[in-house]
Length: 166
Image (cartoon, rainbow, N blue to C red):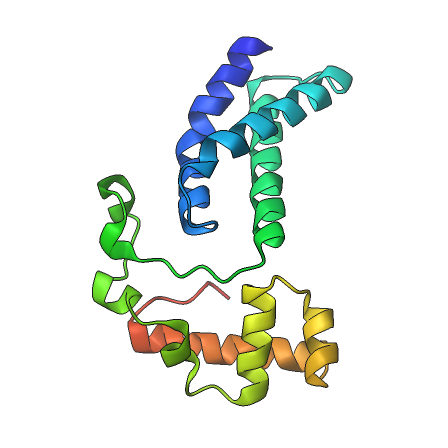
């Protein structure tokens, strides 16, 4: 199992570094995230023997993602990315220029209706569920999600960022 785990770590290391940098705002957390994911994967795989190397890779990837999500919820903060200091390796993944990335959240959200602004900050800034957001804004879950999606689409359009596939 160790060679398969080593291969999985090598396969997911860059992805974990990117997640630590862009989701949590600190690339140095990647080692801690990977270490915790390895511990969890080893414990899980001891009880659930893998069929092949892809099973090991999938398990490790799942635990890495869970650890990033856990840390993000723990921090409960809105992280803005400054692409002007992003590493050269990650620059090829960015379609947003440093000038566009320098726009802060207040400027971006200035045009938003108050309920949508509040909903976006609760959902993406504090990682609250859509149900909690709907309760606090006094709207239905579907309505506030659609309003936020429409506003995010307008932001993407202004910045020239292609939207998510439908």
